[in-house]
Image 1: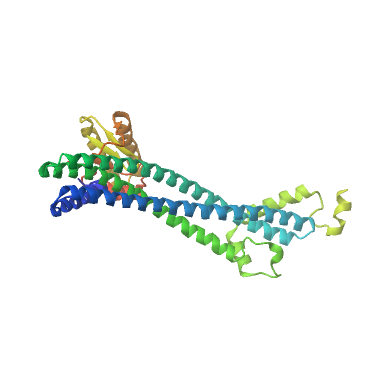
Image 2: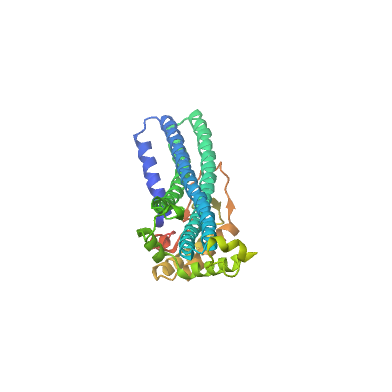
Length: 251
Length: 92
């Protein structure tokens, strides 16, 4: 059989037949095979735990970014109401960046969620198969006849083996996806470490490196739009009045 | 015949479906090799549909080997180009 599936089951079959060739007592081979299956199931559970950990990590980052978005929005409003359009613009630029990151994080969290569900479902199926194998091996051992047992073991083990290989493939795919997301999470962490989403009042004056990067990264149009909207919300003249005059003008 | 959809499980299909599945498989190989993603997706859906419509899902207690293993449902075209080559999933 060609194709991935074919290759996979061929590998399993040859492994099983090698195992059986070496075995003096197929009954022992059965017990050994069962033990191996249980061990592999443990690895699968560990793999699922890794996916869950990756998901939690992304969720934490997503929560932090959400807070940043709210904070930067508030700061932009404050800055604008005090006539500091430059600061408001900077805050909105950061907010845009944070929102973009947030969107892509959320997409990936959902994807991981799907992977986790699928793997858990597969793990349960595999558990059932291994349990069936355990029962079957006891039956074979009880009616032990070497020649017959060889055939039966081979059949039963191929069935479980295929199931395992399939789960292995699913794990591999999940791992690849998790890897991409880890890189993503690391990139967001880097931005965080660089203070990209930080409180703008904590920054000194003057253009820093991050600011310049931000201006390149964020689309000016979105920031302009938001700034205009905010100005309109704050009322006429809100943008250029000194802070102390604010109350009077709006009254 | 027993068909597995990778990541989902095994299905028992009437033997006469083997021919149809093989035809779709060969066409899918041709589409994958010529880089025709639209055509490939169409054939791939038909293959999955055939298994879903005609097949009976096997329960977890069965310990049988599949005759054909289909790749995961959400296979990307790039991945598919590595799988659907030569004789395809089902050798002639």
